[in-house]
Length: 350
Image (cartoon, rainbow, N blue to C red; front, side, top):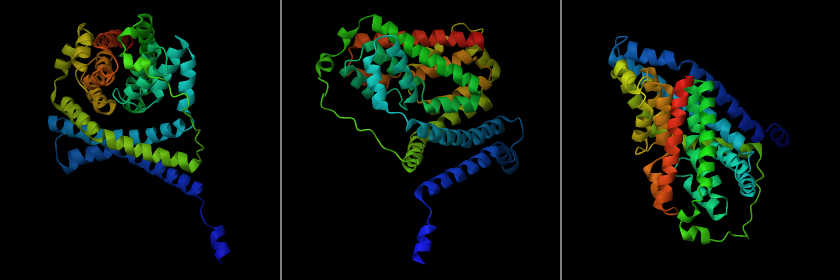
């Protein structure tokens, strides 16, 4: 009898895939009924009239909150699952062996697939500098990592579609590569703090290759999804709250005059406004969505978003530990110009 029970015992792999399948079914059902539920909650249960400012704002909020969390949960799980097949240490070693050009492209792509914000990417940037990787190549990573991460990419797909998300991905990597090449050609190594250059690489460090089973990969996907959603939870809520207010109460004509294509100065102004602010993609993209709904131009609001997530005061403060003020100022200036140019290009093609 005991042998029969053991023979019918479900293996961990089967159990894990069964949970993934159930989660996928529930995800599809929930996503299908978000909009009808938001409308019912706003206009039937609360009794708000269609077209009212409060009604439009609340319907936007009740729709976008579950939608974005479902997109984040589903896509981050899939991306994390794919990332378990990427050996980041090998990628770093490959980048280290390359010079300018190819090294910048590899570093930018590496930055795009790593889930770091502008502050959390700084430690890895420091490790690159200490490892002797060319400064311009390390900047390509530092620039691209916060601009393009799975949160930004997922939310852009959900709100604007694959075309805009793809263009944003391409522009983010291009900014990282081109800016890194420019910074590398300027020979700015003298502005790196001396103790960083003098630190010796740990030649005896060993990298152990992980041997992951499917159960390990799925568990890592669940854990990473839970951790990221928990970290960005309030950013999403606050961002959608601001977006809801813009959607319901800010007149379309006002935003069109300020952030429309006809206002040539709107792109540099949005970058200057965005640099002192600090948020991540989860908080700023809902605001971008609301601005676009109100008639703001695509290039202007995306330039604003790039400035917020890619350049921040906390990042500059952390970088000051290893870089001199002159290099930080040049870094911010080059990226700001690149973002402004990208904003104008988006306005031309959109």
